[in-house]
Length: 186
Image (tube, rainbow, N blue to C red; front, side, top):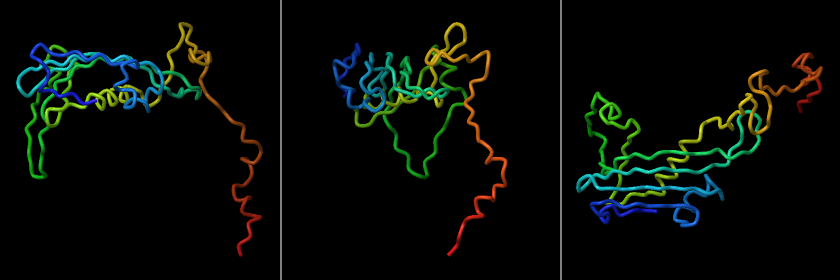
């Protein structure tokens, strides 16, 4: 879903996107499958080129627990706070200057980021897709219950280690080269 930023009024425009409005169903299919999602975005011009985007994303992605391997829905809730600026092309010999003070230290809200757009169009679908994808941790796991057990498989996590061990049998004690004994090279 591409938004034409030059058509946004001075007062700003709000976009409410969910499974029923269906604008992002195709873009988010690989992440959220058929689970509901709720995206609210408000875009307001700061000047003729820059825009402020704020809102929130609520969704869930189908994941496998990194502890037990069972499937579960990982809840994603993210606040959006972005400044949209025009994309600046850089050739291979270009140079840029960077402030020694990060924007998070100068702004009141520490969760502000910068995104770029091209030809006065911003691809909101791609932005939302990446915002959801980056919120999923490398090793997703469901939350724990109050007593410390896993809320998905109810295994205790605090009192004993969460380990799966396989017995290797007597073959591990044998010489590792024993398997080469019956090998015939022709």
